[in-house]
Length: 342
Image (tube, rainbow, N blue to C red; front, side):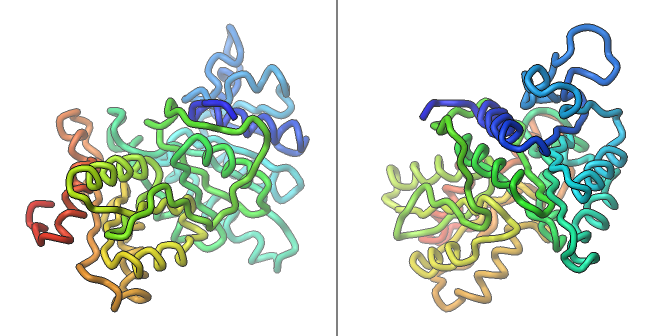
């Protein structure tokens, strides 16, 4: 096992699946350095360098640059999936789903259902999400709740390099459309990643911290922030916290969440998505229905405000939940100081 970055883990997983299965193809903007561009090809490997070096190994028949027309290449990928290929498409920013909404939620998500289970749609759509990079409102949203809402889509949000590789390989081998979301601030995160191929099943949460006093449920980059909060709670306040990373929002590992809440009786949900109709709200509802009588304190949701992501750095720094806010939320479940969270 070697230490690799989040970016390297994704690149390695993609290469290994392309070697294993000749039906796997990559489609996206700048994945070879720019369609029709002069100069060195493979200059970028996509906007964030994840596919860098793959063109030299697999050639242009399997690495396809596209125009800046998301509706066209996502639609083409959906069609390729139902005719026998296994496309991995790169939607540069998840915010751009607006121009290919029909192709994803009205077509690819429904093919298996509408055709009576006679067709498969092994399509992976990779996209970046998240605030904190100064990319402003149109390039910084966390829109995984929108995809989670749609039957027929599987939604994956890895939080570590290890999970990124294993979940991507699982996504490529899956016969249904998968939305695979990568926080753009995590590409340089380092972690232990096996050199060989492996998969992580969908719908199985990770529990990086276990404690008896409270539970934090977090997604993607929020998992790292939740772990920092959990460490401070243990060291400074002697509060032992269970941290749950669902890994996938559809399917969702409800059992692991409910079991932890029943054991600890206190829960905070840290979600980078908007607060209204987001994953924090959805999980709060599930806990209220299935574990209400085990709660020792109200469920708390820590999210950004219900507003567009600000461009001004001074505002953006306070937009995404910080470890201190999650720490204060957990602490408030014991001392009733919730008025300080707003």
